[in-house]
Picture 1 (tube, rainbow, N blue to C red):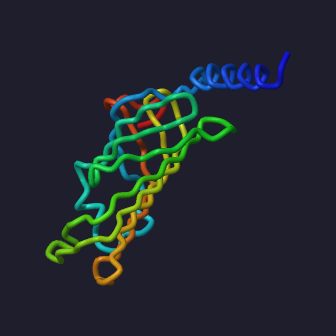
Picture 2 (cartoon, rainbow, N blue to C red):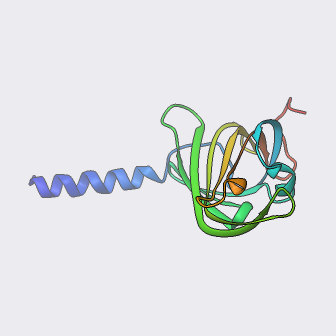
Length: 160
């Protein structure tokens, strides 16, 4: 068998298996329910109430999520060991209000999410959101919080 044919066969087999990896997390809409605030420089958590949701899509190990804050899309992957996953996203040149009345033009908004599957309809994790404004330090803020992600108000058995 030629080297080219082996490489093609290996690539075909790998692409076929990539879509079949067994992760128990459901796709779809999840509400992120804050459980602990670790850092909130500008009172952002209160501002984002009602927008803390993800629409999760899974393809093999790849995780995509439409995030309700700033209409951002996160992209990441399931970790090799177990049911943990991570995702990141960013948007640039965002106009927003910070601390209720401070108008800000942000250079970038970044989000990093780490999560672990509890069951098919719930995961828990930590989210970091950063506002970066190079010319206005009053607009530079970070929000870090722990959360439970719950699909359709269906928590795992034994979780309140």
